[in-house]
Image (cartoon, rainbow, N blue to C red; front, side, top):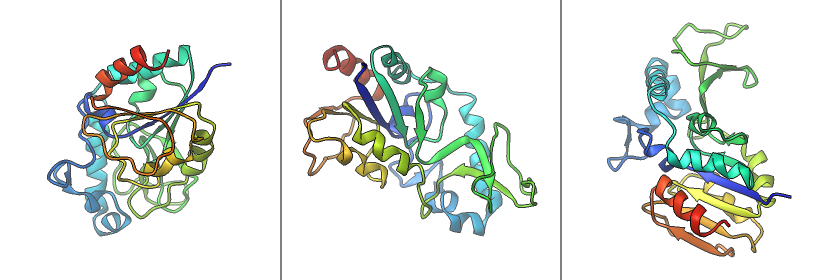
Length: 228
């Protein structure tokens, strides 16, 4: 039976593909205050701005490609039972060939009703004010904004509890509940943390190996030196 390898990925996973990390050094996201474009308050204040912001992110996604790190994760499925838990809203893991991906914070390529959270559609084009669900409610990006619940965390917790190996890639470990997931792994399970500027991990009982590199280079080191 293949070992269960659970991977938590953040914005640094996709940075090499040309997608800006969530928190730039100036505190802005694509030149916007984060709360203007990633909160219910921002949506109610200016839904047109929010739709335009995510329309541009969706268009950008069509122009970028998975990087070597994405492909290396997909290749690990040959030898491991790989499950990816991602904080990213892009579809680069899917496009690289990974088959088990849980998006904690939603997906750019989906939209949902502003009222019926179960009304979700695949969507690759722009969303406009006046695009409605079947009951006449405005459609919005299928993104978990600040202040909203993270329903997928209920699936992520048992995945982490069942892991034989945990890999963390490209996350500052500042956004909860995702940042606390590793603490649900069994204490004997090794944790590998790949990030060029790794955060300090406190109170982790597990064996920890930090690889202070970007996603692609770090994954090469991990695959060649630690997993086999």
